[in-house]
Image (spheres, rainbow, N blue to C red):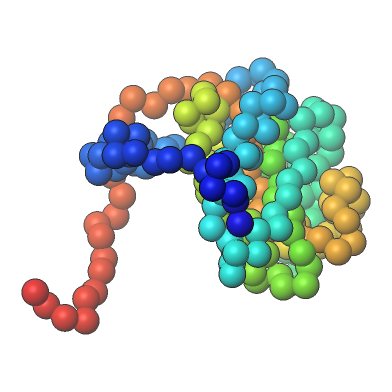
Length: 214
């Protein structure tokens, strides 16, 4: 438990209004185009310090992070993920489509897997309870995604990377330096957005069912 003297008081004045909170949450966008500009380690650390406050399964916490910023290593990781996709495509039909689409973009000279993001943030956690670790990692990275725009950063989930990590593709785990007792619990791209969005987009209509009518 946190000692009382170290706790921060939350006053009514500091709270967002419902309207402010809705606008803030709806303004989040997945960023797939980044400036060719490195992100300072201290800024990433600031984002992840907020991410660690996210709720975790049975309050286990225990999520740590590996941040990759070296351009050559990022390119190698992207290559390994595509390599894994082609291997997975041999037994998973849907991956065959994804691998072909990704390869077509790479053949055009585009970095399709990690989108030329200047940073890859990888959440890792205990291998003892895979599902709990996966859920906790996603919870923490969701906090990171929400907080990142407040410091000028954009993010996007690294889906194909995460799938390769969940499959424990050894060459990928080796280049990341994931300890033997840890698993990849998620990954997000991070960097300075190349484009600024000025509008909020709509989603599909709300679909909810209540057990009782009012």
